[in-house]
Structures are given as structure tokens and as C-alpha cells.
Image 1: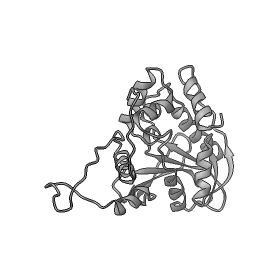
Image 2 (image 1 turned 180 degrees about the vertical axis):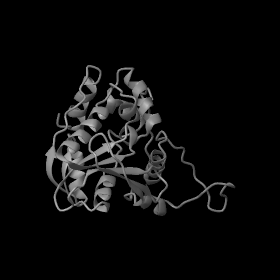
Image 3 (image 1 turned 90 degrees about the horizontal axis):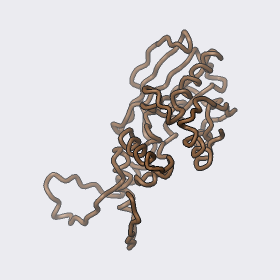
Image 4 (image 1 turned 30 degrees about the vertical axis):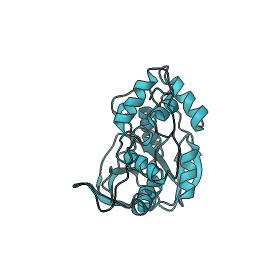
Length: 256
């Protein structure tokens, strides 16, 4: 991880890319040992899958199915409902939180919020996630309706363990993006197709999106969701996360 690293490039890298993507899908460090295996000499207990089959599966949008929904009175609003969705591939569940009774014929005030255990639960001062979550719910409550999609994509999609590895690198002086790159991840590994799919499942086709991230707007529109308005969400700036927010604006294009 420290480098400098020496690269050897020879031949196609499709198999290697698939191995890296498979590791990422399991929230493992994106590293793999790739060895030739003769079809007639497969070691016992080893699962062998053709690249032609697993490649499309790794790139496909997750298929989500509703599991249960129940009424839940919340601080943000007296009336609320929580929906749980489970993907076919056995991955993490994702949640949709309805505030009030949103009108499906109008653009709904919506927020795509990625899970942040350290910020949402522990009140971390390294990010603005917890304050953004509470501010979004408060605004939906004030307007009387909204939907918050709580997507289990911790650490911009790299998982909690890798996020803490990135934090350790940040303590050595690297910014958020640099730390992700040193671990072998992209700037942002999240899949916002999940949010578009959940909105369609819930009967919404247009949103007023609470976000500072232009990529979310692009992904919603690319997946058939009309973004009628971007609603800025400014909350949670602290002395401890000033550098983090500056990196989001400079390297990830967030509109702060």
C-alpha cells in the first residue's frame, strides 16, 4: 500500500478485473491471485465459474424485492412507514422511509442516504452524514411528506472495515479520495441504481432531490427518474471535517 509499486502488463485483463470486482462485492480488499486451472484438473472443493457467466452478473443492477412494510411514528413526523427490501443476490438489505403520505402524482421530496455507522449512530465529527440524515428527515417532516432511501453502502460502498482502513490512512495525511485509491478502490463505489429502483417500486417517477452530489442526479435521470429540482442540503460542517468537505467539493464535484 505504500508503494512505489511495479506493474507488469501483458495480455488481456478481463479475468483480473472480474476477480477484483468479485472481491469488492464481498467488501474485501480488491486484491486477487489469478492462476491458470486446467478444466480436467480442478482441485477438490473449488468452485469454477466461467467468466462469460459471472461478468454480466457482477455488472447487473441488483434486483430488489419488498420484504415487509410497517407504520412507524417518528420524531420527524407523526405518520411514517418503513419498507424493507432484499436483493436476490443475498447482499445487504436496503430501506425506504416514508414521511407522511407522499402524493405519487407529484415530485416527492427525496433523499438517497448511504449508511454511515460512524456518523449516523456514533455522531462522528469526521463527516457530515449524521447531520445530513437528521436535516433531511426534519425538512420532510416540516413539508409534511417525503421519502428517505437508506442504502446500505457504508463508506461510499467499500464497507465499514475498509472505511476504517481508509480512516487509518487519513490519519497519516491522505485525504478521503487518496485513501480509497491506496486501498485499491475508486473515489466512490456506490451504486445509485438502487435508489432509482426503490423509487419505482414505491410508485414514484419524479423527485425533488435533497443532495449536493451531481452524480446522484445524473444516475436518477439515467435510470428513468425525473429530477424536477435539486434541493441543497447543507448541514454538519465542523472544524474536524472541513478538509473532508473541501475534498468532496474539489475532487467529487459536490455543490457545497
